[in-house]
Structures are given as C-alpha cells and as structure tokens.
Length: 218
Image (cartoon, rainbow, N blue to C red; front, top):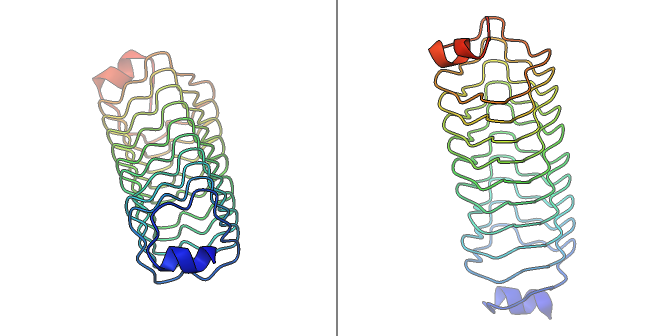
C-alpha cells in the first residue's frame, strides 16, 4: 500500500517503508519522505527534485544517475551508490556518507556542513561552492576534485588526498590538513588562516602570495 500510495502521487509519506523496492526510472518530485526506510531501494535514474528525505535511511540504496536535488539532512546514505547523481544545491547537512559511491556525482553548491565523508572516494567530483564547514573528510580521496570557492572552514581533512585538486578561493580557515596530500594542487587565494598544516605535502602546489604568507613552500 505504501508503494502504491507513492506511485499514485501521494505527497505526504513520512516514515514510509520502501526497503528493497524498485523505484527506478520514476518521477517523484516534491514528496515528503522524511524518516523513510529506503535501505536497498533501487532509485536508479529517478527524479526526486524537491523531495524531503531528512533523517531517511538509504543504506546500500541504488541512486545511480538520479536527480537528488532535495533535502537529505541527517540522512543515512552509508554505502549508497550515488554514481553520476545530480546533487547540486542538495541539503546533506549532517548526512552519513561513509563508503558511499560518488563517482562523477555533481555536488556543486551542495550543503554538506557536518556531513561524514570519512574515506569517501570523491575523485574528480564537482564540489564548487559547496558548504563543507565542519565536515569530516579525513582520509577522503579528493584527487582532481573541484573545490573552488568551497567553504571548508573547520573541516577535517587529515590524511586526505587532494592531489591536483582545485582549491582556488576556498575557505580553509581552521581546517585540519595534517598529513594531507596537496601535490600539484591549486590553492590560489584560498584562506588558510589557523589551518593545521602539520606534515601537509605542498610539493608542486600552485601558490599565491597569501599562501606564502602563512609559511607554505612548494
């Protein structure tokens, strides 16, 4: 009945149980699915624009190429497949994204403050202008990621791989970059005030005067 209600266009389904349901290739805009149980659900190529999934559980869900420009605040997306998903300006504040697959996903302008992205593979991902304040990106793979103009104030980036990443204009004030790899990255005009740079690798990094003023040498 819950699935029938969803597919019939019912707009209010908080807490609905849709575990392991096949919802692929569906257009489901503007539905309230706060607290929904979507563990193992297949949402491949589905459109969830404007949906509210705050606090929802999507552990292991298939979200490949889905349009997810909605609200996932505090959602559990652990091990979810978000390959090529459109998450532009999505609300993912405090979300759990541990071991989520985000290959070729678009997260430009997304709100990820306080999100847990520990060890996540974000290689080449578009995070331009994203809000990552206080996010946990420890050990994350951000090789070649676009983080230009992103707000990473107070973010945890210890042991993160930022090789060839674009950090131009990013706010890294108070961020923990201890042991991070910034080999051949671009950090022109980035704000590094108060950042922890202990053991950070800046070999081949493109610096500007501001970066030089905090003692960074490439």
